[in-house]
Length: 259
Image 1 (tube, rainbow, N blue to C red):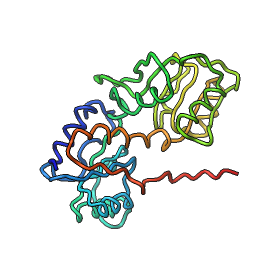
Image 2: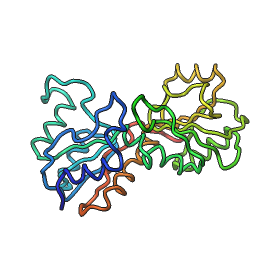
Image 3: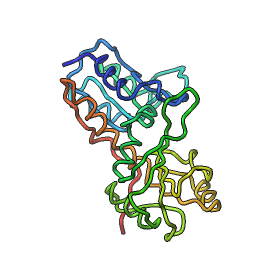
């Protein structure tokens, strides 16, 4: 049993709030830092189902990768799904903490995790904001050159996927890769020193643009690249005397039907 502020301190030692992008909302979003915690529910997203799951499990704290309340809020009431979720937390004394782009950017965070999972080497940080230490993107070398089709199948296997989306020639030779979890489409650029760009999701119009620029892009799904945040939270908090529960209600809302 620990205090909530002790949980926050451990997370922020590994994933400092200062590493987050300027537009982000990270840290303790709802709750009292002096609250006692013995059970923590970790999830990718927060919604009413995750809140109810935390209550049922007896968790005093929810830790998510994706935050809520990005924009200034004038009202919190039961008229909106977000408002109902927030009220549920407050009424049941459950706190909410989020580590978002600070988890993406930090050494040992989600993008480093993906680079290691894919088996890449010689990782370099890219897309560092002014006055920031680390950036969202990673550029790495493949262990050996692969064709785009081979690499796409390799990524699908590493993420345990039964499908893969990619843009480019099947036989394009890939030696260096750009990696960014989630919505990394805005970081894709022909000016970057990468043979392929691997991210979570892109818009169709963006895909057309990338194709016309002759870029190789692998996009595997936002959820699929960032659900691994739960593993990182669990590992980081293992030094504390708290029970960590991985959410089972936080599932991918985009369904894939194999024919």
